[in-house]
Length: 118
Image 1 (cartoon, one colour):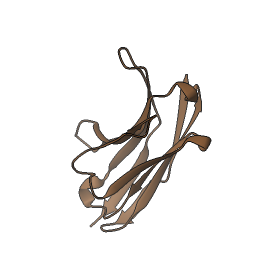
Image 2 (cartoon, one colour):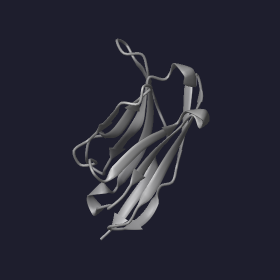
Image 3 (cartoon, one colour):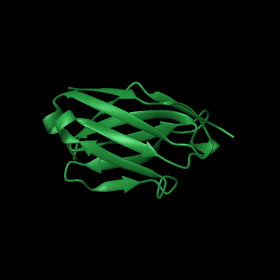
């Protein structure tokens, strides 16, 4: 089992920055991938960025060039630095962790609201 606790959401003006953090606890040594999804009202949850345990990163097109995912292995924490935020980035951001590949176990955080005002 893995428990995930997010922090860092809030209200920011367009063009501003926010950093989200997600602290993992439990079976953290088994985690293969950690990352972030988001869900805006009326839309499906979508991948924002993730990072494998060997450091390979993956970004949604909408995040490339503006968002940076990083991980502090000693703290079992993954971060999402978001710059040049746009109103369309407004969503609930969910941290996730995946264990395994063929039949993965996926764990989710409770979500943190990010609101970007125009």
